[in-house]
Length: 610
Image 1: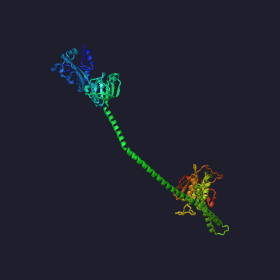
Image 2: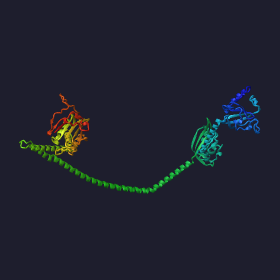
Image 3: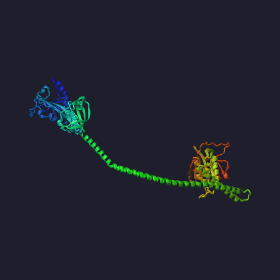
Image 4: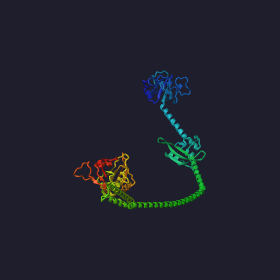
């Protein structure tokens, strides 16, 4: 207390300070004359004093008639002015408010408790004030939770019934009362089993001990029963899906909750669905019967149409077979006619034309020899030129006949291991016979490479390839360039590239002669190789690249090195060539010829004239 007694009441003051609630003493003037420690903590704020304040300042809602000395004290009040706990709002000394519960009682002689309190009256009012700040919040939360639970129960479409341990109804939601046909007030306190679970669906009694509710109240187990029957107020049977669950307060079983869902809407939907399925099946059967005849007629019509289409298709096939047979006969006759003309052409070239040409060439050669010396020089030169022309025509006919026999399959490629430089040399010599002597210059580079090829056919292909790019026509004449001078050098270079031999032939003209190029492509194809054409930038000519497999050949072979060193600038000795021409070897720098697209080093040291 604020004023400590100094004598025998010290122990009583200590007890009052230890109370959990605030204790306040008020005199007959309504003024606070003393308070315990809890009251000081609850009402008094720093810088203010509680003792000496009016009671109504702290408790504005307190009934002033209860203050000692009041002239308006009620007659029915207890002689000691004891009151029941009353809730009201208290106000601290700083003006803040908080909820409290107040109990009051009169003390007739305050001197007995506090001898030196400073008051003169004999009657005091003692108030016990309990702070309800936390309690009010808890009660509000409980009330909110209770309202929420009630709303959930009201909104639930399932019936919910709560019972105590004796199976008597203590809770029922509106859905349960509506399903059972009762008002909620009619169900309170009644035995649930006797009311709605007394009989089975067949009308036989349903003992309480066998019901799921009784087992839940007895053992605390949950039960789910599908298709359970409940009885409504009017005695109707209600099919429901029922669930029972125990209600516990801690570990103690205090009741059970039974929830049930009315199955009548679902059963009605199931019956409606079953009825619709029956009607649908009946309708399908009726439609099937109605359309059976139509389906049969359609099926017969379809079969008849298929037979007609089959017969029509057979007639069309027969007509097509006859037409194709006639076409085949015509094509056969055409092929036989072409084959006959081809044989006639080969016979003409090989016998009728070539024989007289050989005879004429021999006679011209005999005249050109002029053993008697009777011809003048100009006539002798003309006879030599005619003899060379007939020799060129004979060689061309022989090569065309050889290509035709190879293409027809009457002749095959005969592969042997030969040195490629010898094949290139034979090809250049054959080209001289085709274009005539003195017409073309050659730049040849053929390193020693061993390959497995047909040397005769490959030399023939090279000869015709050279004649193709040399631009010499069938008469042996060379076209005149529009700009005047035209370099007539033909470059022939060979090299090994992996498993193939690559021979490149470049000339001043684009090639594409219908006599030479088919012979070259046929021979190369028979060797399993390819022939490609490349344009040379800055020139009017073309470059042909001929590639054939090495086969069983050894490939590049190291050349024999002479004991006396020869300068790189010097050329090899001149070798005589058939037809009056000459051929000289290129320098070693020509090895780079096949590595670039532009023309190689076509210098004068590598050229030779024929």
